[in-house]
Length: 242
Ligand code: CTP
Ligand code: MG
Image (cartoon, rainbow, N blue to C red; front, side, top):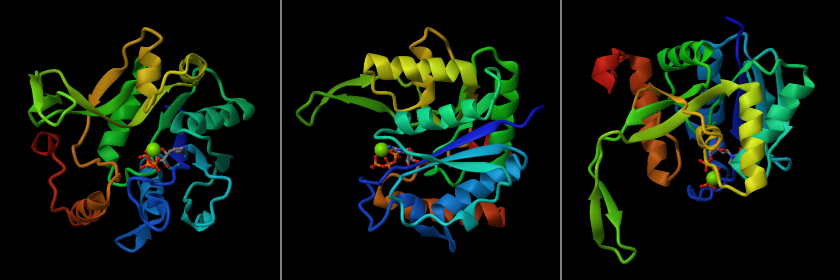
């Protein structure tokens, strides 16, 4: 298989985290979140070509954290989707084929496991649409009434959390994101833009510990997950992890 292109959006400011710097530059187990995430991706795809989306004014980034041989820095945009679109344009400028596989992975997910990365890539390579790592919803789901009370309980069956990476062919992804932007549709992941084209991305079951660091309490949790994964305390057997 030809190695994928990797797009890592890392141009966010981490408003919900409320730290003194963007969350990708907070330290976990002696390394920045950004360094962890890139190490995990590199371990799975050492020959991949990387587009790293960074804020133009970023003063925290250090290129020593990038383990890839072939990588480029791309300016982030106002929203995540704008950052990803900038990366796709950079990939096109490198002469990539429309059929090239692009995996988009949030920098804020440093706990992504090698086996999930490999499985997603294998599925996406064989699929006409593409797909995403996802985990079935485990909690009972409530819809609120807008005033702090339960309006109803939503059926949980068939609901999934959308994780990353999400992988699509370059041509499809460019079309989907350009359309979403032109239509003014807010998309928080690639799959929803592809869905809006009338296509159905594959759901690839992934580990539940691939958490996105978003709120302050997520940081300690991510640190514990990383430590446990490295020590082998978390079983890597698929069934036990879902
Ligand atoms: N991101 C980006 N460009 C933006 C906004 C977000 O590249 N204009 C990236 C973030 O760096 C992160 C990913 O998209 O890796 C997911 O976004 P999110 O978790 O929302 O991160 P932030 O936008 O930084 O956080 P917040 O929404 O709390 O400000
Ligand atoms: Mg955000």
